Image (cartoon, rainbow, N blue to C red; front, side):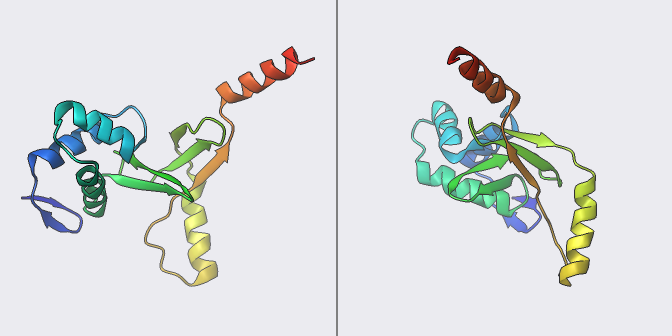
Length: 142
């Protein structure tokens, strides 16, 4: 049995492989990307198993699930509070450290009366590569 923040769960070989893929990922992968990687190591695994396991791992605090409106969730190996920046053009998602975000949490609690248990700040915009590409395309069309 392994323990996380919400009790215990049975750690199977499949779950260990899925967790390993997330922990060793370079970025924030979708369930589909994780499934493709896991399938190389465990060919008989079903997509549903990967999907349910990701939610179980997140529920137990071993990984973090990041949801973005109508887009596919991404999974993050970093479980401590941190923020992200997201490119609306190419979909790149990157960790950022924003100290003022903790102040925002206090202000939100004071203004709402809520006891804030967690928060996540997401900055959206255009990454440097997409900005450069857009500038190059604009320059070539002139």
